[in-house]
Length: 239
Image 1 (cartoon, rainbow, N blue to C red):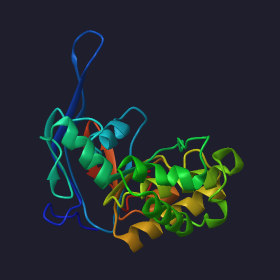
Image 2 (cartoon, rainbow, N blue to C red):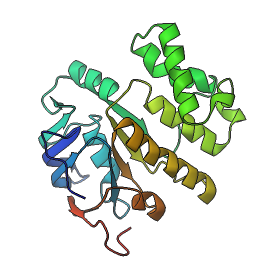
Image 3 (spheres, helix red, strand yellow):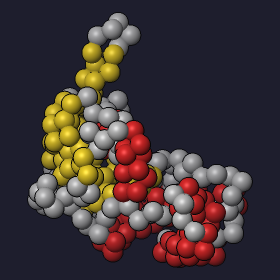
């Protein structure tokens, strides 16, 4: 239960702050000196009250937003100082995102949805199809490859979204309430899948969740409060 050292980390945030301007023009500081290092094969769960900035944290960690101050590195690449083009390339190559709502393209099959990031990245059609086919097999959906989202259950759609997040072989997965829209049994199946992928593929995963079962599978449980992260691993009632 030790934090990764920056040298070994797939994802490293140091001294990260993020501020916004309020309606009155004043500063609202959502993140206030966040430090976080995630090692290969490690899942970190982030918990906290609604409105505490958990989604903002994921956006900054995943290079969807720039920190106001501080540094974020992904796979050793400093995203804080990267220009927009380099930032987009790092994000598309090194980070996979899984959200509460799967955001699959409804007019495309499961296979086509998983292929999409690869095709956008310029991967040859044959290679993209082989990779997507393998990923759907890995998440237990080989039989659903030709099905569109409307023909799949909620759990199957979310598994497809997980496969899509893995399409470009990212080193880091960021998940925002990935099982928040699923029933208990389906959520447990998804939790098992995520934990297995972390172990088998050596991913670094940060997951925002209110789900105690998912948090219990994490190597560390961190509480985001007042803009800072505190380790609550093993503390009863922390989630």
